[in-house]
Length: 129
Image 1 (cartoon, rainbow, N blue to C red):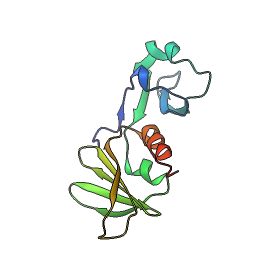
Image 2: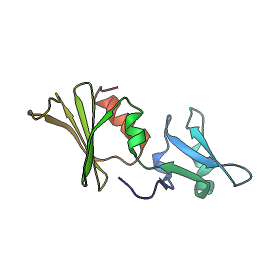
Image 3: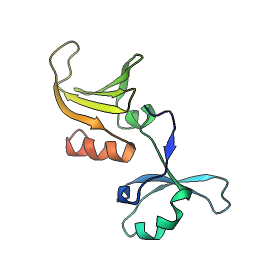
């Protein structure tokens, strides 16, 4: 996974449900915020340097009910019900269905997932959550 924990999002990433952090008025602390209907991305474009998004982490994956089953130098593997999710060191993510240890599995998703909000969308589209 990413070594740097946070990044400044692109305006195109904003959508309802997008999880981000906004620097407080005193510019000392970061406050969690979930993008809501009616929030205007165009109004924050000039303040992007005061907004950050957490890269996908193990904590993010576990928040969807996945449990760690193995960790090695190249990846971390999680399971939930009969779904296996593997996050590689380079940030690539693979999601398999019909997980049975050491048995055949079919790939449902393979690609990069940058943050928790993007993972949530993929899991919803695959009808995992």
